[in-house]
Length: 485
Image (cartoon, rainbow, N blue to C red):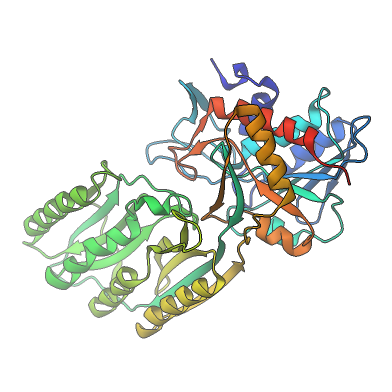
């Protein structure tokens, strides 16, 4: 069985077509062209704006012309993550999927259900000939995952609807009416390079891996291991107490993914290899015990490698590692307004040594702008105390919940009628585009929903099959229930 054999077939076939198109963030041009041609092939008004956002308009079905206009919104880019042993070029290769019971998974890579499945449902509304609905516009944005470039560039006035249904949430049976804002931090701590001294010719690569990773917003509350932070914990005593010299370090590749692996090239003093091996073995035991529930496959390894041309001066290496260890990480505060919701967090996403700079890139999130600003100041303080600099970019505000939303009440009523249960009303600790889009269209009434997706932004991403059909039937019923203007 393949995903094309699943029901509802119209949705799964549209999702399958998207899996065949490489679309990592900032490289989703082929998907943009596909969506443009999709709209044109249906004879619908189709617009591609200067940024690459696609807008497709479908007129109301007969008798529904007086309903409020609805915008169905999602993003076409996906997070490119894969397991280390998987050969996959996200700019060229399609995503290979398989069915495992009630779940659809990818073969060692991210699946792209975030947000490919939401886009597939919107395309299915355009394609369907048996739905009853008022005027519908589909808005598919670009580069949501690494900067929300498409949402930020959307011009006022181009869309005509009154209601936005965002299809980028990831738990069926939940309606989202709020989300966190975000801020990118890029820190640089300078270091001096020195020649490799005599007696330090045992070059090795130390790797922290086997971490589960995941979405840096929704999964941050699971307290999974951050490989970059653990690497600092491994290396600092080695440099300080064992005389090991640090040559380079690297970990993570996406701001919105919790890093699963990080590694460093080091030089071990002659005669110290056995002690270092024992230390790493003991520390691995400690870390596996600490993370036995969240990251049972965690490991720390050391293997020989080619000798580097230089190493980082000892005092500078210590300074850089202390900054990495001291920067805020993980959940900072839980929400006072909504139980179980993370208010503020930081993900230490990417580290790299290059051109005399130890670089640390993080993604800060908060539903409270002042808390996000305070977190930024704390990071600035740590970095500047160590003689480094930090730049903050890509900031955006959160989406403030509106419990009195008319479309929320409509969707609650429809869900209860269909399934005999009330949907949960939630806010999410992630960067939905609703907050940004409301800046250009402040009159929009907005709700976000979607099928159940587990472990997005990681190769463990999986899509629940029964939830897709429930979400599709719900969306069709909501469109029919949209009130008059």
